[in-house]
Amino acid sequence: MRKPFCWFVAMAGLAACAPAPSPASAPSPASVASAGTGLGALNQLRWVEGRWQGRSPNGELFFETYRFENDSTIRSYTYAQAAGGVPTDSGAITLRGGQVTTGTGQARWIADELTETRVRFVPLVGVRNSFVWEKTSPDAWTATLSWPPPANGPARRVIYQMTRLQP
Image (cartoon, rainbow, N blue to C red; front, side, top):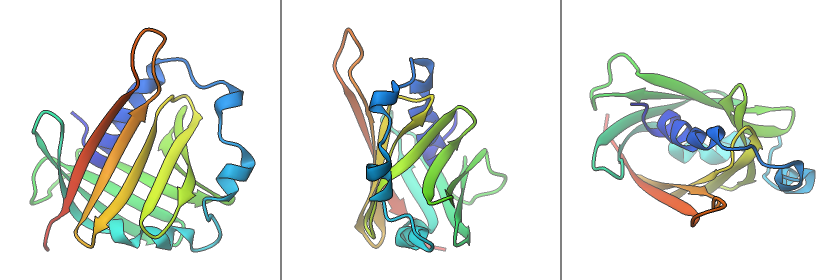
């Protein structure tokens, strides 16, 4: 099973099996521009750098590391064990052409809000859900994944608590 950043993205990507949002529901250039995507914008996410432990809704622990590769790329690595080892998955958040995005291929999200304590990713292509990462302290943050209501049911939301692991 895939876990955290990559796991969050993978879980969010489950919505990719559903129809993609219509162009009317895609983020507007104005909302994307408001995400603070100038050079160095990713520095606002420095708080996510490091090693983290999270707990899935079924109680399973997962572990991730976030590392700044440069001023336009954050790499993430998912591990089965707290000690690390060989990653079970990896991903990236990138700043390219004034847009902060994550995901791969035909399942991608774009940041429409980016501050020193919060980032919100909304559907760009092939997905229906959004997710928010919010810093709650220097050593903790939450990841909230939200899916819009399907035609025959309620909207869905899942919250993950992330705790910093000490080196």
